[in-house]
Image 1 (cartoon, rainbow, N blue to C red):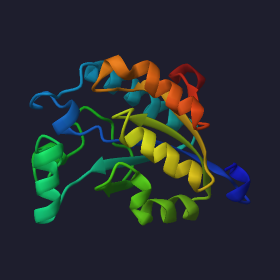
Image 2 (image 1 turned 60 degrees about the horizontal axis):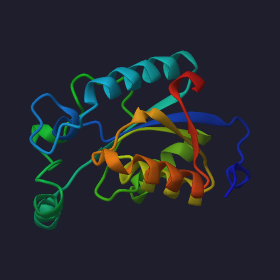
Image 3 (image 1 turned 30 degrees about the vertical axis):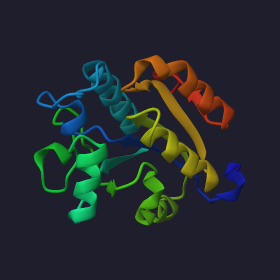
Length: 189
């Protein structure tokens, strides 16, 4: 879908920072985490947050959060027991610059499963999204697809994402392109 589905009088942009949490990138994350390139990722994402602030681009923070018996069971079975609500590992990585209180949780890979995110973006007349964070093959990808389905222009910042299974980079990048997701680097932001 094109951005024409989301016409606003004063269209805005947003940077979505996805799942950069203590359990995944933190200095005390447990195997198979932290992501190999966490330090590089955090440096790039912090630079992009600063740049977004200078350009009046809204910064939105997304976090994975499992809650209740079913959520905790899913996390333990499929997610190495990570991102359980109330645990310190579910918090944003302490090294990430938090410049807004625009924070949304999700319990599925697509951040748009939290309908409050779309409502917030509409309230702020946002029709163009830039995505950074993790995991490129899961939450970043499914959030990008969810955004496209809802008529947003979507760009993924290639050097602002990481992948746990690094051998899959080529196939993940091809999947982005095959689905009409624009790839740019942080210098193009």
